[in-house]
Image (cartoon, rainbow, N blue to C red; front, side, top):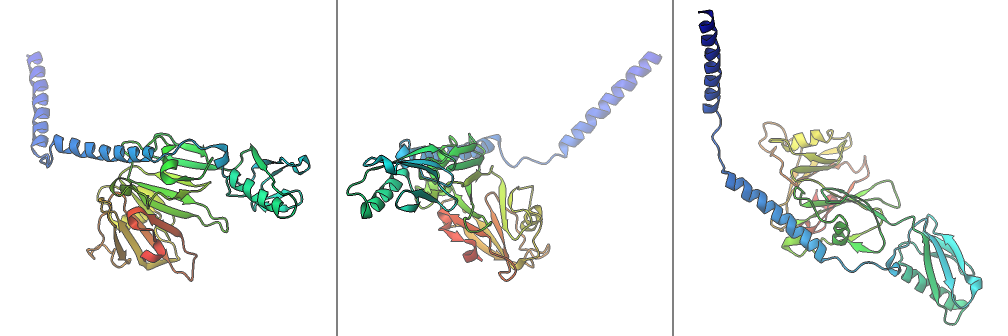
Length: 339
């Protein structure tokens, strides 16, 4: 009798649990898309990345030669003048880009290829000292000449900057983009004259839609290239933590600014800019906003989307302007123009 009671008790618990599961199932939200829809969308995104990768590799030229090497600060050079061994010298390129040579003194060689530097030195010796000099430059130590790839590249890291190269050639060093890559590349570039850095943003749709020649800008030694994953918003300007942020469910512009640490005291509350790509290679939508527009009940605090750019301007009297340039379909917009 006791054993029968235990069985009834056990089956009662099982039935109660099963009933609760059916009740939850009946209250579940109804599906609004099929599995085929989701797979098609995912396949389309991968096809777009594949097209970008194909365009990147198609743009790559032959491997650079030593004559294409761009001389930089700290490089150790050996300069030989074949007409006389007395002029043979060895030295490092200084911080200002000059190399000291016999008779002609300091010669600026930074940012020249080795061939360009040879021609320049030949011309300087020809002016006063030699009738038809022939100069050879051998790079004994390559100290400068590096670019860095970060984010959704198949291969990330620091790579030698052996010759002048454009954006597509530099990106190809990363062996293409991953399937979950966003369609935007950010180039962070330092300034020689100040501690301020410049950010150039290129919309990669232009590579497929237009051939991408306008967006295929020159990459310089020291540049950092970053491709975020899809589903990110970029916040820059007078915010405390500029950068890329994962778009959370129904994140609006105010929440994106909060994710970036909020605005600085030098921020201009009436100079908030939203740049939104249309995804068809055309010019993006550029919307000017203020903090008043972003109040909870204003109706203007719209949700952010993948590849959105939010820029908070500064009072020019209070702070130096942050450099942000948008290339590709953006048409080379500087954010000081967009505001």
